[in-house]
Image 1 (tube, each protein chain N blue to C red):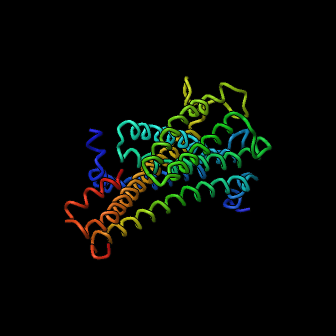
Image 2: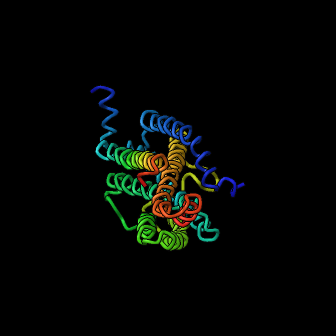
Image 3: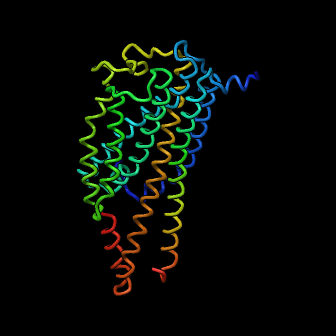
Length: 56
Length: 258
């Protein structure tokens, strides 16, 4: 058994350890991406409203 | 000093300069923390490799409490001084706190199954953290439940302040009641009882989570300010067609910011 495989098995607890890391990454990464997209969308919308008064 | 920083225009300038360094710092610290947690920290003599779950679970629990405290303080400031930036800070911090609490609950459950033999137990610590999660959800729902943003914000602020009573309950639940959870092992009189080889990755992950929270809070607050400004501009638009812009826009903008 390779060292990497041994490490990935987490002493037989891989089925609990990796999902825990996946959940942390998924939830925190997800809210990070959502926050950034929201900021970019709001910046674009504000720019549009400030640049083109005729559209308002 | 705080009043100066709390000016929305000044906040946008300052936060604009801070977001990138904070994001880079968060990424670097989290990468170091994950490396130490996954590759360097040894297995626990009782828990084995499941102790690695602690490195994402425990800092998430600390952040869940800290962020709620931030929401409550900002809500108090918004209620008393009616400062729009404090109101925005509370409203934008709450989803982040809910996310940390969700991570804490799910990773705790994933640790509990192999160690306690159950996914969930209605013990005092777990139940009070679940109540904290519902407080976050209730706050978010309440703030968004009103057409009048001011009423929603006030109702949410009251809920956030009332919910503060849950924080000492969570913190001291392991001392006040017999629970499955072990008693305090880091923030305790007499110093931590954890071996430094596990304590350092835990603290570094906690710093990483804190930096991530600060980065995301600034990003979300900037987005919320942009959205309020855009709403003010849209509201001002019809009035601009019938009145001189200089007279109409500031009035509508002030109304939208309330």
